[in-house]
Image 1 (cartoon, protein in one colour):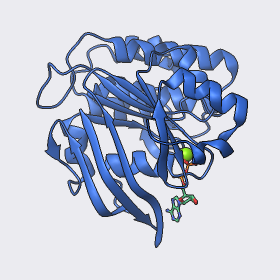
Image 2 (cartoon, helix red, strand yellow):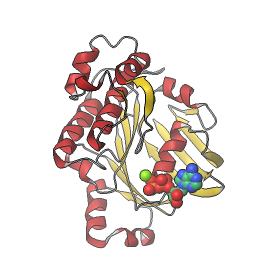
Image 3 (cartoon, protein in one colour):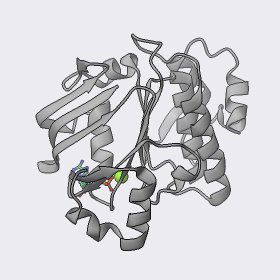
Image 4 (cartoon, rainbow, N blue to C red):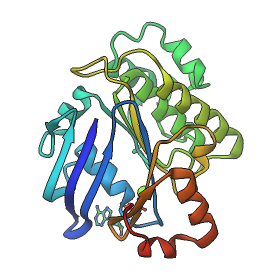
Length: 246
Ligand SMILES: Nc1ncnc2c1ncn2[C@@H]1O[C@H](COP(=O)(O)OP(=O)(O)O)[C@@H](O)[C@H]1O
Ligand SMILES: [Mg+2]
């Protein structure tokens, strides 16, 4: 589904990613761990195609196609969706209107919103005055409407209270286990996800197949996500730099 080869990226005149290699198979979920400032969000923003992230070297392949230099809307149409760590407030844009633009065929918007307890937010401006958990649920509602093949989720549990983590974790589990085909050209492909987690809490809700640790803008190790998390909890992220790619 996704293959990243030797990716080197600059933002604001700084190199934030160096020679990143990572892949997510069709129907599989990978998690990306790493300390703050290591480049995790930059990687997701680059995959989605945010224009300030300049690819200096390497390639991003999606469903076998080179998307390295495609504009963001093309990537979205092909089936890539993102839940940003800190999405912007959209003053003057109602959440319900945005969801209808994402998916004209959203038959029962109210019911969809109700499944995420967001029905009271449809008439409100996107993210304006939303709490941490409400922002995440708003992002999930938009993703549900988009129905992408590849979910890029940036710290879905951050800034969210424990009760909301459970709701969000279960909603993500539902999204990824959905048997309906996803948007894009090859709709029979299974859904895939690349999920950033600083704390690993999301692993209480979803099954992940592979874990990666990012340190200083590069992948320092990869392996079984639960084993990696155990090591990180025991030794902290300082040790991850020493680990070799398995
Ligand atoms: N637009 C930008 N301009 C300059 N530096 C940036 C920009 N975006 C991110 N960075 C820097 O890139 C580094 C990696 O950031 P980020 O990808 O957000 O890390 P993480 O998500 O792992 O916490 C940080 O040092 C951050 O300050
Ligand atoms: Mg981040």
